[in-house]
Length: 357
Image 1 (cartoon, rainbow, N blue to C red):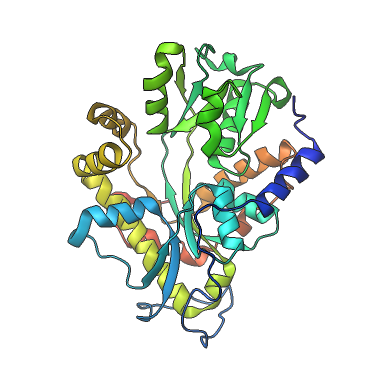
Image 2: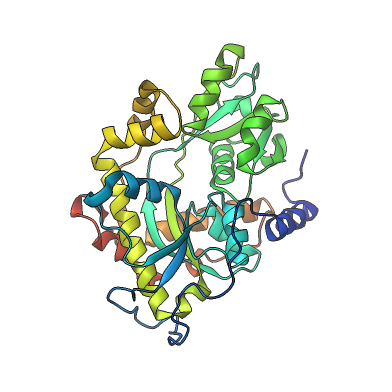
């Protein structure tokens, strides 16, 4: 059983994050923007306005946005800059490694990867925030492992990735259930291995997202696999960038334009549920139409805050949970956010999708 304050575990996990390979990435060299002569604005300077220059390019990790743009076609205005590559990196550790390798300029993740990046000394910043107040994960059990209520987590081997949102959900769930860290066994794995770990009996419990959990229960439910929806939300989805990307004004304009694209794509999918369910869940992810309806019924309406105070508070609570468990050093969550971008996403969507503070 892993001690919740083991310095050896913490240093080992940090090393893994710093040195792990990223599968399928093309390692590119050089600045994200073709405009190398641009000035380097101060982090406190007002943001440049207007469209990016025609030759500005960013490498983007945003598969969902890419698919939404593909499906929407002319109904959505795509990026005004060039997307040099839609990078195949989604999990937090992969995104961090891609940032460090200079192979990626902007990505969408939950709040944990920016916290983890800060802890290992990588300089990145959050430039946009989306709030989804409904729980997004489901705890699934290995075949034959009972999971009727949260007390059943006690004494179990739980798949855990401290650098990803699944890890945050695990810690928040244990906190809500009154279960101490030393009353469970954390099995540290990247989230991409959670399913195989469940199937192979390496873990008893793992937090899964849709549509993965539906596919898993469809396959193993008859063997005794069970699912229990999380009761705590994974509140924040953020866009974040290496701070070096913001040293070029044309890059900043491109980042601001991508915030617009990202926010409007989220709204488009929400307003076109039938098309999106069929294209994404059924055609792309391979679930049934009935399961797609059930998954969508649990989705949160996009909400873009005009003020990031709630986001900072949520990030702080996540960071405190990790620090209390000995996973990271303490951090002031405010340093993770660049508030100069605070109103950009809200300005790109109609009032129906804006959360005022």
